[in-house]
Structures are given as C-alpha cells and as structure tokens.
Length: 259
Length: 271
Image (cartoon, rainbow over all chains, first blue to last red):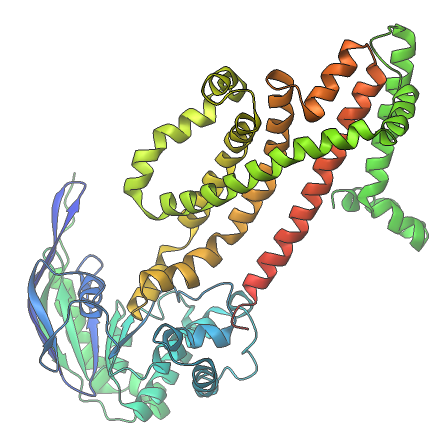
C-alpha cells in the first residue's frame, strides 16, 4: 500500500514561486491500477517523481508498506514518456539495465530480459538498437525494462503520449492484458480522459495552481477489459464517467482573461 | 564522399571501373596536389630566387633528407616531447573535462581559465616558460601540453553535457549509483566527442612541438628547420616541413582508426 500524505512542493519559477503541489493526500491500494488525470501544470508528474524518489517534497511524506521513502528503491520501477532507452545499447541490454544496476549476474539478467522481450511481443529484436524500432516498440522496451525488475509498483509517466493514436490504442490494450496477468500496482499519469477511464480502477482528478486532488472517481467497468476495449469505450457507463470527468475538468479551467 | 553526387549525370555512360575511380576522393586529392605542384614549379621558376625552391628541387631535397640521419635524429628528439606532452594532456585533460561537464560548480571555477587559454596566443607564453622551466625538455613538454589539452577538455566536457538528462534520471530511478551512471550512461554517451577531441588535439600537439623548437629551444625538427634556413637551403627546409606533415597525417590516421574501433566497441557493450 502506498500512502501519500500532505505532499507539498514549490518550484522557483521565473515569476516567483510556483506552488506545484499543495497538501496532496492519496492512498493507493495493492494491485490497484490508479490513473492520475489533470490539466498540464497540475503537478501530476511532480507527484509521480516524488513517489519515485527522484524528487524531494517540501513537506509531507510517502509511505510504501509503512516505510518512508526518500530515494528510488527496488520495489518501484518507472516507465518514461520519452522512453529513455540507451541509444548505444541493444534492446536486450536495455531491458536488462535495471537488473544490471542491481547487480544481477549477466546470464541471469539476460535470461530474464529475454523472457520479458517475449512477454511484450518483441521476439527477434533482441540485438537491435532502439533507433531501429518504432516508437510503440521502443515503449514496449521501456515497459519490459520496468517489469524485468519485478516491481511491486509500476510508475508510468504519460507513457503513451508521445505515440500516435493507433499505436497508443494498441499499447493500451496490451498494457491491460499485461496488468491482468501481473496485477502489479500501477500509478499511471495521463492527460487523456479516455485513457484514464479505460485503464484505471480509480481516476484521481487533479486541479492546477496549486496542484491538488480535486476528486477521485471510481471506475466500476468490468475486468478483464483487454479483450473488449472497443465495446467498453462505446458503453454507456464509460460515457457517463468521462462526461463526469469532463464537467469537472471544465469547471477547473481558468476563464480566459483579456490581457 | 562529396564527389559522388556531382558526377550523377554521367554515371550511366561510364564503365564501372572508371565510375569507381571517379567516385573515390583520392582522385580529386591527387588532382589538386598535381595542380598545386605545377603552379609551384612555374611560379618558383619565374621568381628565380635562391630562397624559394622549385617543386622539383624540393622533391630532390625530400629524397636526400630521407637518407640523412639528421632528419631521423631530429624526429626522434621532437617526438619524445610530443609523446610525453600528449600523454600528459590526455591524462589530465579528459578527466578534467569529464568532471567539468558533470559538476556545474567546477565549470564556474574553471571557465575563466579555459577562456583565457582559448584566446591567449600560446606562443606568447614561451618566454614565460623559459624563465620558469629553462631551455630544456620540460619547457617543450609543457608547451605541447598547453597546445593539446584545451580541445580534450572542451570536447570531454561537451560530450558529458550532451548526454540526455532523461537517461541519467532513468538510471537513478533504477537505483544506479554515481559510478554506475558514469560507466553506463555518461562515458558511453560522451565517448564519440572525447575521441574526436583526441584526434583534433594531435594536430595541435604537433603544432606546439614545432613552434616551441622554432622559437625557444632549437633542437629536433625546429632546430633542423632553423639550420637549413641559416644555410639558405630552401629545398631542405621545405622537405623537412613535408616530413612533419606526413607524420601528422600518419598520427591522424591512427587516431581515426582508433576512434572508429573504440566507438564501435563501446556501442557493442552488452550486445
């Protein structure tokens, strides 16, 4: 279980201090797929980075199974928006990277990496370099790298937002399929309402300036969803939830003021 | 490389072998050199000065000098300082550049000195070196270091700086230590820039080697050049310069070869 309590974060911006996060409280249950949705500038990525241990909060704390986290740890693994693959390393050694950093012997980590390459559907690409792969395939490598370390929590920072629409849809389906098998706890940042609803058990809606949690919406859509993505997206329930989120998002929108 | 596109229009009409020759950069290099040699010969003959040798005289001097033990002795003496100076520059310059690239504070401290080195006329430092180190080996080495080190520092720094910050963050998120970040992210990422810095600084080191011997301690190649000048042996003077140029080209070739090998080998890590 992840308990986020009273997280506050300020950044020094060009026009004075920016309140990125203010008093964020959140509990993430084990084996839950939690999506975090919000307008740009609401601090959702900052929140994820704090949970990842890449950034320190000014106030508040994050507990994972009762332990306070201050730095990255083996129970968490991250998937990045820009993939963050080593351009000079093969797919195999990219996938094995997390294990390598953790001191897993070469044979063992390569065996594990090969297993995950098959799992994400990249068999045959082991010896290629990242630039030889499409964006969707590159993000599969990023996902495999994170899964290879067998994390308790998967932190995903807008992982599909750099992809084109059809690739994104395919990867959403695949992620659902993978999650239904692994049931890893996921915190998934997105700015797409449809994505948030399609993937999540709950959607955390954040508002900007200061970044706060505005609302947490349950998504009671049936699982497994990976086999019926299209019918889910056209269902009445799906439309109701996204409509609700849209109404909330719209009220948050700052009125356009004449300069 | 550049020649290929320009001949596109006649490509189909020419036989395969000729096309290969035409596409090779060596043809153009040879052609340019021939034109240069002819122009030299013609202009030197028309001037008829004893100080300016013709091309053919220089070729003759080149052959004679090749058989002269003084040349090889001079090259040996000069290259001692070159090798030592270059290695010192390498051992200090690369780590310094890497550190500056990684730690902004160090950059702020060293920046002003790097800029001074960048704009200062190196030759002007020679009297200073003589005063502090004397007319010996040490002065020659120090000047070569000064000539060679700057490009190494700047390229290593730029190489580290160019590494995508997202990759460092990714490594940190998996719990990588600073050492692991260096080994797996920063060094492989900076390697191409480091290697090209080393290649460029070879030319600079050779330059420093000759300058210091011309202006300060007349030994080695510089000493040879000065003695030929004193005896108005223009053709021998030119021939000496050609030997230095040839040496620089050989060193550069070795560096290029090493560069491609190292960069390729680094790319294969973990394959």
